[in-house]
Each structure stands twice: as C-alpha cells, then as structure tokens.
Length: 185
Image (cartoon, rainbow, N blue to C red; front, side, top):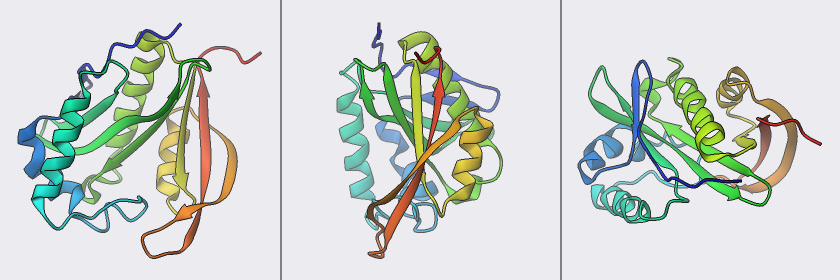
C-alpha cells in the first residue's frame, strides 16, 4: 500500500533535500534555470527572466499541499545554495511505481551530488512511501545521467525511440532504468 506523506526533508552527508521556498528563486535561476548547458537534455528553459523562475517555484510551493507531490530542492550545505531539483514526475499507486526526474547546475556535474540525492530519494520513496518500482529515464545523449542511474542500483530496462523533440527540433530517444524494491512476480 502506498502511504503518501509528501515532500519531507531528507538530509545526507552533503545535502539537504527539502521543499522549495520563494527565497530559492535566485539560486535556481543562477545555478540551472537560466543556463542553456545545464538544461540541454531537458524540454524546458532556459529562462531569461527571473520572474519566470519565481513563478515556477510559486507553483511548486502551492502543490506541496498535495501529499502525493514529491519535489525536492537540492541544497548543497557547503555553499548554502540550492543547486538543483529532484522530483517524482509520474506515479501509479496501483502499480506501486514512480518515475524520478532530476536536474542540477552544470557547475556541480561530476561530483556525485545527483547520485547522493537520487539514492536518498529512492530510499525515501521505497521505505517511507511504499513504492516498489522506481523508474528513471534519460536522453541517450546524456550518458552521464545513465551512469548515475546505474551507480544508484538501477538496471537498464529498454530504449524508447523518438519520444519527443529537443529544443533544437531534433527527435530524441531515451534509455529507461528501473529499480525494484520487492521481487517481481
């Protein structure tokens, strides 16, 4: 049974994963939302106007009233800034499954920060919420994201072809990874 408890704070060695606050607007805009390179594998952004970033955060804050919303700011303790986001993008209570998405500013790539956040969120979603199947996917050109998923214990499941268009108009494929927390029957 799924026990929806919403976005509660999770602390790791280097991170605090917590709800977004309006005060995070500057950090989000500076660290990833306005940076084309940080978002090159995502379908949204970059935002040229900080007002758009503020609006996005405002929407997320209002959604926290729903206990089925799981959306964390990735706060790096050492610099006292929000440097990314990790959230449940799609879920199915019936199948006890969810799909995680994440984004982090390029300045913080290659430090296993996303890996630390992903492991913590996967643990939370399985042990606290009750999800038995956690899915993540990445653009096939974003091989670093695939390595993060593998290091987090996820297994390659399949490649989906022509799932959407990049901002440059080109079609992209995604690799899908899965981690099961109960034995599949």
